[in-house]
Length: 310
Image (tube, rainbow, N blue to C red; front, top):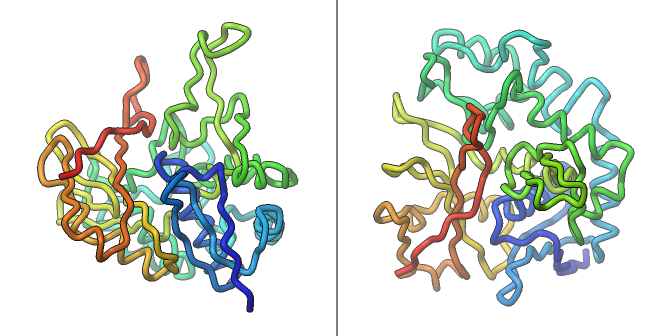
């Protein structure tokens, strides 16, 4: 099978949404489409390069469209089962349970428990209400549930294949779409808007791809505090750090690289040592943190954070 290296200009690995969308693209192509796929990043542009049987961005978008169309109307994931995450209406999120109830949760969703549950919730850490902790890649606002984290972006790309291509080659923002707050630019102030209005404008295709990356980003804990791939604790709050790399890496290799301890910050600036980067093929490391929105009570939007390299 011929392998093509396709650079995707919209997937800028220096931004949290661009990087997460690139991871999601890798996982969908490899684990859902089941074609040999690897991922790298450009030295000059930091954009994602997909190494796959797909020669062009259009072919990649067509494959993503086929994945979308294969998801039943009652489901929100391509490989998680129709009932996962479970719908809840206006009630409590069924996935946010006490530690005592967690074992039953795993038993109820055996298919999803292998792929998705370890990336969404863990009984090895608790939130302030004593419930099993959820991944920091989600930032539930108001009545938002873990199901809607996937549901909203999926609904925005169903029947809209152009939005999948836009995710790869040139983002277009859609008014009223939150982008699951994975991108700080979703917040459009009145000064950004031609009509002087403040509103949220996200990128549906890129957001959907980013949600598909979660099985690569496991959540666990030390019994009290949550631990998640790419996230690190510091005094002023958790920080997300991620590397970009030159060699074409498949899913298992990417998973190992993302969990490598060399990317843990050595102080609270954050500062990262580059001593072992040459052997790993790493280009650079980037960071982000949740920034609160005035007047809102949820964790906030993912915004870039400078990283000091020594």
